[in-house]
Image (cartoon, rainbow, N blue to C red):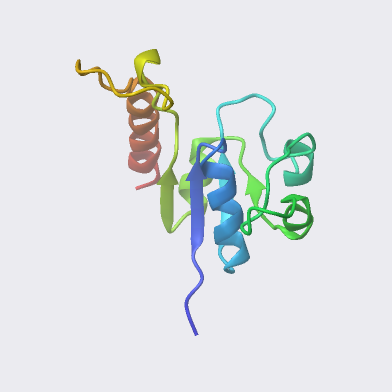
Length: 133
């Protein structure tokens, strides 16, 4: 039998939310956090995803039945996630230059992703981890 973990997930967007649901489906206790003011401890997963058109893992059926059975919860702060988690995943945005939108051929010039959100998140997370000891 595999061990379940208390998982913290920072960034509950296009990547973080589906991965959190997948971890929950595998029996892990997932607590997510997002900087958006509409996501917090009183937010339900179904409420957050009520207008979604996402498909489930089979890429055919709606994800909504999975949401109904999911136990993914949301935190009000990074400190809550740090106190909860044995392992923490960070999935915050790293916007790219408009030249790299993913449809047209990659230009010859090199422009990197914008890591400002990620750097800010990691600084804040590090402070919370230090406080928690």
